Image 1: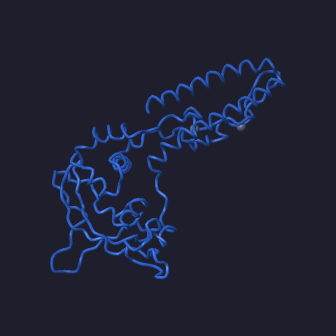
Image 2: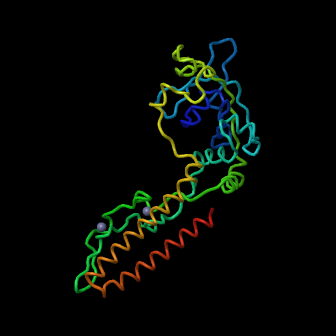
Image 3: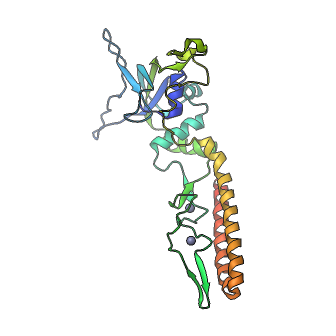
Length: 284
Ligand SMILES: [Zn+2]
Ligand SMILES: [Zn+2]
């Protein structure tokens, strides 16, 4: 079972005991078997490894207790907790990040206006015949969007839940209930005992003495995105303004007439950026 680093930690702590998996059907409508099955009776337990990526280290080992069919619309808050999430919106966000190609929503980058490239302060030079480009159009990939022209759009719980209800409630899923068999070595709460393999003996906030170094970072969670995005955008807007002021000063010294043309272009660009910022706010 491949899960995020955060959910791997919830499994190791015994707080995530369920996983919902889309039910797949063959082209002629036959339901494909659930990939996770309980142990057959009177035989050694069938176990599954928990990893954060295919081929990654084993974080834990689980045994499946049951797999039942349901719809995502049936999800209750206790289900959300058993899935290892604190809120239904957090579950919905994670579900859509995995199963919805249009999620998370993106918007045109406010720094480069979707172009993917930005001008440095020296991109334009002025001569008696007018301003001309000194650097190629793609000399500076946009630092805010890494040259993609898009950034993550602001989201909130209402937006997350609205899309989840609208697009995913009818999704039929397997509810896989499982129990934790082996946790990796955990730092024991009484350090004289060194390491423990029992999650409940481990320090509450020190779940993986071994695994933290090997677990990979996953997509930032929604809360971090919500907190970080407006701040970054404001910082880039400030940088853009400073760069523009510097450029204007230099040009004014070199050729006052050329400044007028550039000022017009700049005003149009700022208006476009402000429009995008407004769009972003309205979307939120
Ligand atoms: Zn950009
Ligand atoms: Zn440049």
